[in-house]
Length: 433
Ligand SMILES: *[C@@H]1O[C@H](CO)[C@@H](O)[C@H](O)[C@H]1NC(C)=O
Ligand SMILES: *[C@@H]1O[C@H](CO)[C@@H](O)[C@H](O)[C@H]1NC(C)=O
Ligand SMILES: *[C@@H]1O[C@H](CO)[C@@H](O)[C@H](O)[C@H]1NC(C)=O
Ligand SMILES: *[C@@H]1O[C@H](CO)[C@@H](O)[C@H](O)[C@H]1NC(C)=O
Image (cartoon, rainbow, N blue to C red):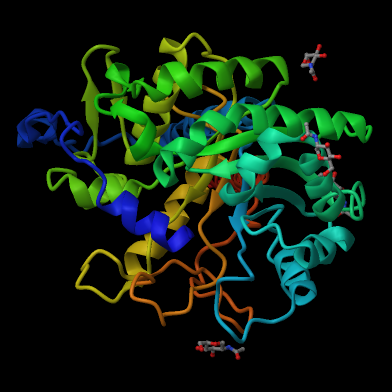
């Protein structure tokens, strides 16, 4: 089903997606020869003292930004990064879920999305410290909406035997329902409410209940982000009542968000903008808000945040339920390659770990789940792309993608001490000369 979803997103309507560009010439930096530094000669007696003060001021100026970094990151909650794991639909020769769970702990992956919510996979994670995000399949929505005892039955099968030893944090009732089957949308909110009430009946209050939308299927106008709003009639019939529910229950808005698909549909987007590459030309300005965007991911997140704001719910947390970049495609898709996939994942993790959030939301997204852990089987026509980040022998496909990469706090402290030590050392040497 997820495969189908991908190809459908891929063929999503493109008409409304517009992008705004700035002329490149604006940002060219020029260094004229007049500004180049001329050597200054000091009398020998003063030279060393002068060097000392140069070094001292270098130390101070290099310490200041680092100190700011340390204090600034300390009180920012960093976005949690997880992965999507679908044992039922991936390769035949996958290791058992218990081995996958311990491999994920070794890789320091702290949360996992189980789209199939296979009870044996939930059980496997009961002995780990990894938090779980489960999904009720679309096909179960009508029966759960019709009768709360069906919600209870689902929970008795997937949650009760394992909770709270398995750290289940959220349940999405349905996935991309608006696209999958529009008739289902009438059942969506009743089903969500029944799952929520059934959880309370079981005495469980700490599992958030929501549903997952797909970016391309809920946003009418995505660019610039300030003009985004949810599509009608889905907005009035489904999304607005759902947002009210999410607010009342402290839940989150879950959205699948693929810069890859948007990039493919919009030839004007530079690849570096989609891949988090820092480059003077990789930006887009939103002229309404005066905000400058440095990557496509933030642009899409802020489009979601604008749409939430327009719908009257600007404070609901946003969770990216799926994102990723295909490392391979059967069809000739030149941009589905391992080099770009690695760049995207590295850039994404670095960006989320930076704690910078997005221009419109300082706290950024609450969680992000990378799609996906293992490649899917290539035997059906539709599984044309491979999104996996691990080989089936549980080794990393992208060696430079590090989930356990130390947060900026630790890195900065490290740099801070190195800079301090080095500069003091040089200063002392010079003073003595
Ligand atoms: C489990 O995770 C929590 C927060 O995610 C952390 O505080 C705790 O130390 C972890 N425990 C173990 C045994 O890793
Ligand atoms: C709901 O399902 C239960 C158990 O299957 C059944 O006993 C009950 O009559 C159903 N209620 C409704 C309103 O259909
Ligand atoms: C939601 O969060 C607020 C503040 O943290 C709390 O007062 C309220 O009881 C919570 N509501 C629910 C339904 O959990
Ligand atoms: C795991 O599998 C990949 C791809 O099949 C292979 O390149 C790699 O060497 C294997 N690693 C180990 C440790 O077996």
